[in-house]
Image 1: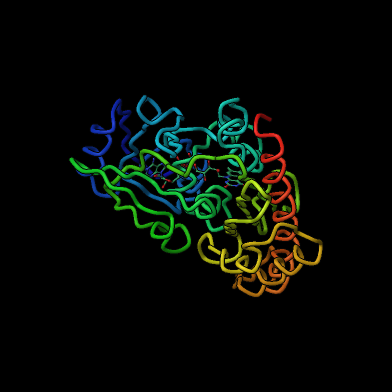
Image 2: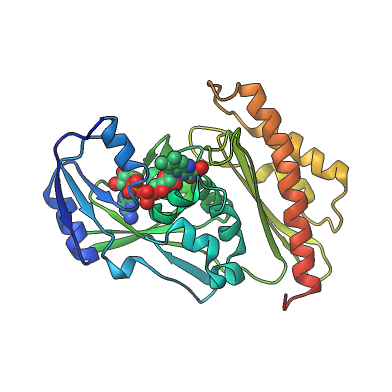
Length: 296
Ligand SMILES: Cc1cc2nc3c(=O)[nH]c(=O)nc-3n(C[C@H](O)[C@H](O)[C@H](O)COP(=O)(O)OP(=O)(O)OC[C@H]3O[C@@H](n4cnc5c(N)ncnc54)[C@H](O)[C@@H]3O)c2cc1C
């Protein structure tokens, strides 16, 4: 199918983009187009105006300052997956982005687009919740930060105003003793995940767990913060197999996933248990390895 008629404008700055959004009802940002264009072709989205932000230089790039890492909204999934600086400073983004679709999707799809689209099975929104990050949103003449906990309002729904442009994503900088892992289940290579779990662990110099955050995709109507399920591991310095499986059980019990053609509620809960146990084992091990080999 082909999309309904729409107008198109390619903008060169954040100000031009927010101006265009404010002036036309039913205007939409066009980022990688990997979700919006299929929705338009299926006539499930009918924007009157597409505001193409692919030429806005201020929306690309990645860097760190004052303990915060900042990603431009137009960072492509493939950039996150392959950039050496991202591997060094934010390895969990590289691991997570590599799980998204196929390589040609990752070549075009963007971090900001994935978060603004807010698909409950998408990986990057769940990662943002696990990292307790935030997004920066610009409207005409104003800018605000929205914490992940206040961003996701429902399936494919965020607290961004339709006239706001998501310009950047910010997360706490990766430090020695941090370890992260994203585990997911897909039926076929490149499919959307049936369910996924991100775990971020911080262990101190003696190996003791100081913080542990968990978030899931495919386990609720939005990315779900499941960190409370891991509180029993705070203060522990060893993670045995029993403790990893106990974490899995608690994550499953705390999840209220939907049932659909891809898997029943019970099936997704079982998946959550296995995925959380796997992710915590890997994150824990990476956090310990980072302490033993801070240069590596
Ligand atoms: C075959 C296929 C497989 C896929 N598999 C996966 C998968 O496994 N996991 C996954 O997470 N995703 C998957 N995707 C989706 C892909 O990750 C998209 O890149 C992502 O969902 C949207 O990013 P985009 O840059 O393409 O956004 P677009 O499609 O351009 O936009 C999506 C929505 O977000 C809005 N938007 C975009 N950028 C901004 C912004 N900066 N500010 C405000 N609003 C904005 C748009 O207006 C639109 O409503 C798949 C897509 C396809 C076609």
